[in-house]
Image 1 (cartoon, rainbow, N blue to C red):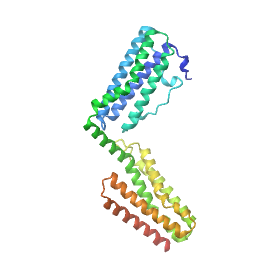
Image 2 (cartoon, rainbow, N blue to C red):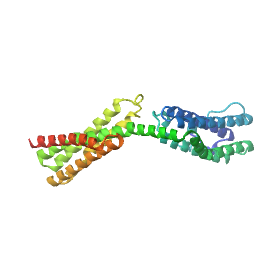
Image 3 (tube, rainbow, N blue to C red):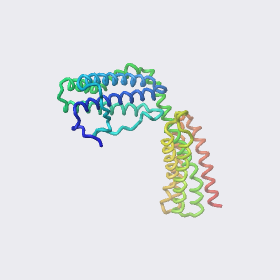
Image 4 (spheres, rainbow, N blue to C red):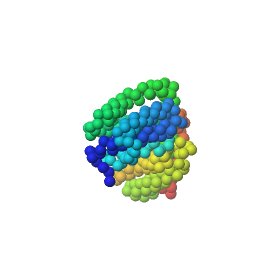
Length: 319
């Protein structure tokens, strides 16, 4: 069972501080290792932060030995109540630079609060001084991190890292999302409008469109997730890509399905056609914005495919 922080002895507080500094140092090392390929300048920042945590740990161990001897009990964060459960973002490859920096800020804030609270429970003057010094270091760490960024992240390095970040965003979010949106918007047109023109019943058309959208979303989501694990391609976690792709596929089909909740068939169909037009324009813009495809070329490719599928659905529905 986890122990309450207020019940820890001075010996246990020092032992816990040593474990925390070691854990933070190793996490910063993992950050540096995960960022080195795509963000080398930021990786050097975390290498220096890892070195600082190592120095803190050494100071704590020296103080512990002078006060309590050689044996340091193993007390970890999950053995004590009150610590926030950390998500193991450092195990994800490739690492997202913004996620890493936010995680580092949270770690430094939590460690600072630990030292500030620990001082209140310690009476030994030398230990109080050390904990106070470390709290000051953590308090100044934001400024130190900024100095490290100025040292390592010059204009050229920042431009390279921004370009790398943009590539990862394209690979992990935009590409699977765009593939899903295109599939959902186009592939569901035929069954939806075939059902609409065959039955002239808006509710039946809505059910067919809903089934086609959800089914396509599930299919595309699993297909994307199982396509590769991202370890070689750098496309990120497969289930995240699958989720993005599946949701966007469903959204692409639902958009022009919802108008058939309108009871009047002609009004519902007119609204659905307007929605389809907006969807195709949106897809063309996304391809132009993120895939560097000329807008007219993107629009031609998307619109031609959409119109052909749309006409196929109407033809089949009227046959």
